[in-house]
Image (cartoon, rainbow, N blue to C red; front, side):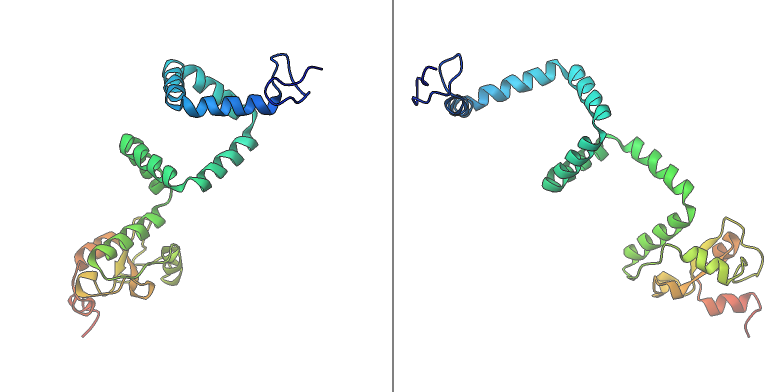
Length: 203
């Protein structure tokens, strides 16, 4: 075997250089021509986008576990890039986001009620956060009846702040009752005692 032309090692290939010397040579060339390499790869990606998408899709189908592990690792190592990509995607796809949210909330009406109340409380600066299963808990405690008129709540009931947020009421589980939609609209932001007196329940 002939020695390497650069370092004299006998472990060489047909080109005349050993593997370590070739690696050093390529690394040096890439470093000196980084802009040229970037431009070449950018041009290739632009001209072969469909080909690359098809190849990636095929690889993901054939290697689901590797793809999942690799993707999770990349997300963990690049949180800022993930955040930027998510923001960019949301700005470019508002209709898809609205459709997905509408579908999710339609399938989870109870959670949607809680989210709306928590959001409203943040705007009012009252603080507090309602439990995700509060509606189910109160429905059972109230035996499915409206806290004001005692008629069946049905499915379209409202989570009502007993002491309204606009009057300083807390957005806490203990300050919530379930009302029929009509009762909640009539109660509005009234004081709970005044409202019940209007209905003839309190003296």
